[in-house]
Length: 254
Image (cartoon, rainbow, N blue to C red; front, side, top):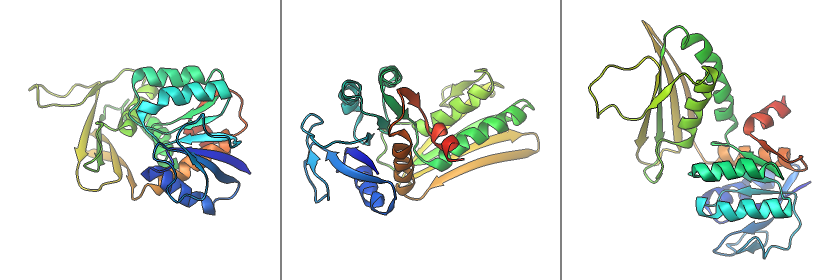
């Protein structure tokens, strides 16, 4: 049985994971970390990592970017594997996560959904055929009106995945209103929509002459991210130091 600490236990994702873990075999939450203390969780909740005296195999983080620096430091010192799910990290924090992976197992992904991470692989294969044939590439992402970062980390991950397949030949275009010029051949357009309670929707559009191919992923609830995080936690427990992604989780499940 994998013993897990939920970092950010009282947040929306922390509570979603706490609910789903009850029906998942092979993993349990033994403690939570949250500044607001206990909120009727069926496990003890501590306000800081240092206060937590419960033994665990892995930490899953869905807290805030402000807490990530200390979290990485703690995991390195305590040699505690970490599934790092918080979004909106700075470039320096992303670098720190990779560096920490030299000393302890760290799993980082822009999106914890197994479906999105499968999509990241699919668009690479599509780009090698369609982009090479001259198809234009556009990404449109839609989220709820409370999301503060734009474009989403998932949209950027999709663009990066395509660009990796094309040897980095493309640049990203976020807004076309500032210039009146034709679209460049080596650009990936990325547009963000914010409204209502949209959980998350991503379209990757390959537009060619007389035909269009679209890959779509729609999230209907936060449960898909929770399930992915729990699968990642089960995968990461006991792993050697290294920097892992959800691609490793998917590969291990085949």
